[in-house]
Length: 109
Image (cartoon, rainbow, N blue to C red; front, side, top):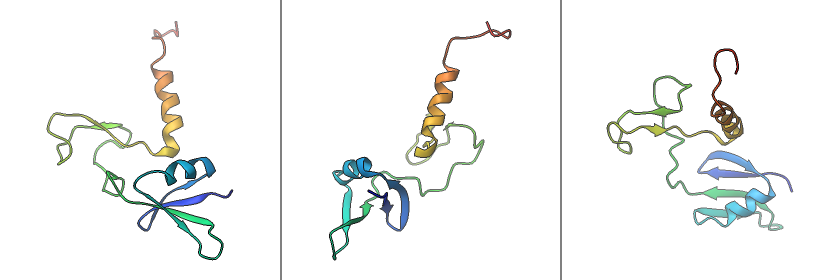
């Protein structure tokens, strides 16, 4: 099966493989769009529920994974993690796991 575009309005958020399509199609905010001619699944349309990825990013260090700026969703003095794009999650996880390994001194011991 070829990848199916997963859309939120006019914005494509991912191209899903068969296993992901099956999972997404059962979500309460998902609607499967099929071609009339043969019923082939051509798109999954998601209603935006809690999706803030379209909002402008926070200012500051783009390499920082958290911020403490006060917003409607984030009260003062509370740190919030930034959203990690799905394509970068495996790399991010590997780096975090490598960094959280046993402590080493400056000589590598």
